[in-house]
Image (cartoon, rainbow, N blue to C red; front, side, top):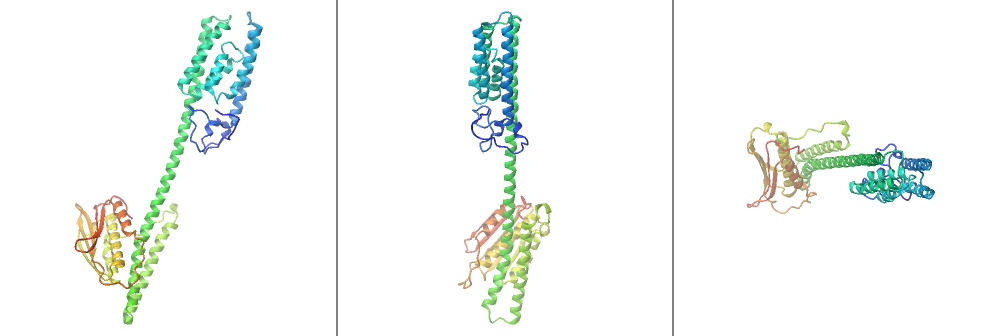
Length: 430
């Protein structure tokens, strides 16, 4: 599970006392959680690993010395050469426990061979078998367990016990082996559960961060769309009035005063709209400040009248029920479609007449259509700047409301923007 060579264990989030955790459970920084069925990475032992390894080594040596002493004092002690070999090989077996986590199967098989005759290495054999059960899946566990059972049968022949019946001694040895394997597999299952829970928590945290980022991106998109819809409309009105003053130097003082008043009012409205939209950016989410009122279909006549005052000729026809019965989402989307269409008329087809048709009902949905002929004559005014994303934003807005939009030139040479919306919108198209 760990070695003394290279690498320091990383401290994962949520672990208050990493020194009390096995090092491999901490060794997932940048590489994902450790799989107990694979070769462990080379990581430095944690404090817990050092304490466990030293205690196991000392315990193995102490128990081995006690067993060797008991065997030497028994009624039929083994030969001296066997006791000396038992001591030497047993001590080496206890030392081999230091690498049991790095190569559990190899160490387990070697110590199983030692268990054929050694009392000194008896406890070390059980520790290595337990380590295999903890760090390896069941096929290697069965292999090492079978090797230990075979080694125990050889031990019974090489080192017979005279104080107990042979059948009882065999049964005790098999039960002890099975108990060690079962305990190790239980620890393995618990560690796998811990790793699974940590991985699941990390995945949930990553998904939460992704959801937050997506929500922020959607909010930015909504605010950008709102700024485009509002400010493009207001500033195009300002440009039209300023253009009228520029190209009508012979206008009467009353006309100049009227145009200047409209420019001032439009500029004030644009500043109010800009302040309201930027206020959304500055307001903390925890403040839960109410958003400014959104337009509905009932505000459409005021929008058209405002465009008329700016010099745009517009004809409106309603073939729908009372506008008060139109759902807010649908009505707001229709308002934005007409607003963007009129802004485009002012930008690209000044001097023409825009025709607006709103028709439909609860059964067939709501259809809004804005058409205009191409610009007449040459335009000497500098074109209004634009990002070219107005219609793209409309496509997204109408799609969010559950409808569809198409735009382009008709067969009779008119430009048409046509949107169909369900009577009850699929969601907020703010």
